[in-house]
Length: 257
Image (tube, rainbow, N blue to C red; front, top):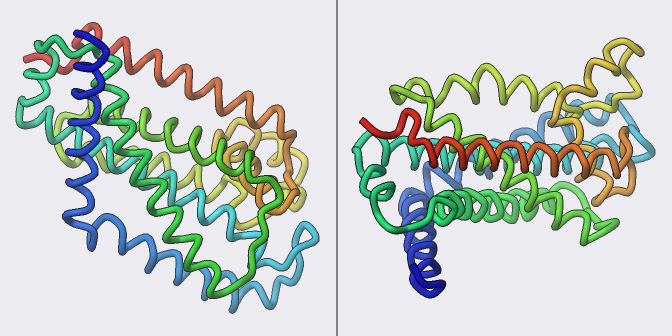
């Protein structure tokens, strides 16, 4: 395929993905705004007043970056896993695989759809946060790069989950039993400095720790882990997930009947 044809194929997949989640925005976009509002009210206003400052900031200011990243992670992941498994379930993905469209165009088309939903939800959740606290950005380049890298990473993870899922129930196993615990234990609601030394060390193997802290540094200028280490870990996870996703597409493992 020529570059123009590849671009056309890529944009076709992206437009399909965007139309899919915007058409049912009450199920894909609105819940995040409502959920984050409840988090802001309960953890920020009610509990936060009793906790006081954390990391030199009010508790509300401290948790907002983590809550924004939590929304980005869950939505980027959910969009790709549900969409690609739907195509796999309907056997329409086989038409893509036998077409002349390169595998990387197919993969990035779905990933871009997940990233777009993650970014849109991030904008919505950030707008809601301004109703509860003022938020000044410490470093715009860091914020943008972490948001993009995180969206890409979990969109790729959603793709891998969709490939291995056999039923619609399977696409909820990883978010429920893996993604949610890692998110809550990733420093969204607390600083790693509060943990005993052993548990603080154990937390270092949680990839969400690097995502949350890198984004918190971009917003507030504070982090529990080295920024360079956080970027290195996130980029490493992205490359690993991308390589494995391409391997799954190239081999057709669990995709072709």
